[in-house]
Image (cartoon, rainbow, N blue to C red):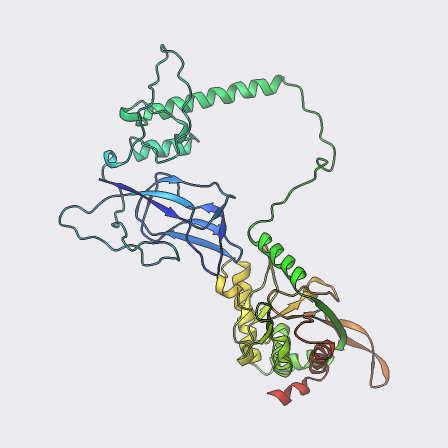
Length: 441
C-alpha cells in the first residue's frame, strides 16, 4: 500500500518564522527523488531551494507562487510506496533542515507502482447528458485520483484543474474522457467570451495615474524584513550623526601603488574596511551592543563587518566574519565573493547575520553625504560618500584634491560625542595620511 506523507515548510534557521513561495519546481503528479528541490522560497535573508525528504509522487501542493507561509505549514504531500517483502527499509533524507522530522523516513521509492494504492476521494456523480443537473462539487483539498500519469500530464498541458473535475471512474477516479470533456468545455467558453467581447462596448478609459487609492506594494520577504529592522532601529536606538570631509588624494595614490606592486587587486572598500577595524581597536565602544534587560553595554571582541550591497531584490547587508584579523587582500577577496553571491541570490542566512559594525559606501550612488540608520542591534555605522575632485586648501594653497565626506551614526547609549568624534577623526586621518595606519599594523 502507498502512504501519503505531508511535507511541511521547515525551519530555515536564524529564527526565521515565514517564507514566500517564489517558484514551484514540481507539479502535482511529478515523481520526485529524496532530497530533490521542490520549491524556491524567499525568506527575510535569502532565496532558498527547499529539498523534499521523501521520494514518490507529488499528490498536492499548498500555496500559490507569491503566497507567504509560516514555518510548519504544509508545503506538499507525497505518495510513497512501502518496501516489497525482503527489501530493507531505506533511510530518509540525509540533507535535512531544522524541523524536517524524518527520523522514521519513508523508503526511497521513485515511483508509485500501483495506481490502486493511491488514496481516492469519495465517488463523484458521473457525467450523463440525459440526467438532471448535478450540483457542482467543492474543489478537492487533498490528493486527486487520476487513472494514469499521462492523463495528469494532459490536464496540466491544457490548463484543466483536476481538483475541480469530477471523475466518472470507480470511486471518482478521473478518466481520460473526463479531461477531454473539460478541454472541450473550455474551448467553448473561450469562444463565447471572444464573441461577447467583440460586440461589447469599449470600457471607459481609466484616468491617467491610476486609482485614487494608488498602488499598494506588499511589505513582505526581504523588503518587509528591511522595513521591520529599520523601524525597530529608529524606535529603540537614540542615534546621533557626526561627519567630516577628508582629503583622499594620498589614499587613492596608495591604492594605485599597492595594485601596481602585483598580486590581487585591492578595492577601495577593502582599504576603508581595514581602516575601520584599526579604528575600532582604538574605540571598542563602537563595536558593541546594548543589553537593556541587564542594563549593560556589551563590548565585543571580534569585528564582524557588515557592508551594504544593492541587489535586484533590494538592499542586503552581507557580513565579513572576523574582519579584524584579515589584511586588505583578504578583505578585498571576501567583499567580492559576498557581493557576487548577493547579486545571484545565493547568500546563506549565516552570511547575512551576526554583524557588529557596518560600513556603508553610498558613494557608488553618486551622492556625497547621508545620515545612515544603524543596523540594529549594532551600535554604529560609517557612511562613505563619493570621492571626487574638489577645491581644497593643501599646504597653504588652493588646489584640486580628491575629497570624500564621511558620516558616522552611533548609538548615544554606548558613548558620547567625544568618542564618536575621535573614531571619525582617526578614520579621516588614515585616509588623508595612510602612513598613520602603519602605527597599528
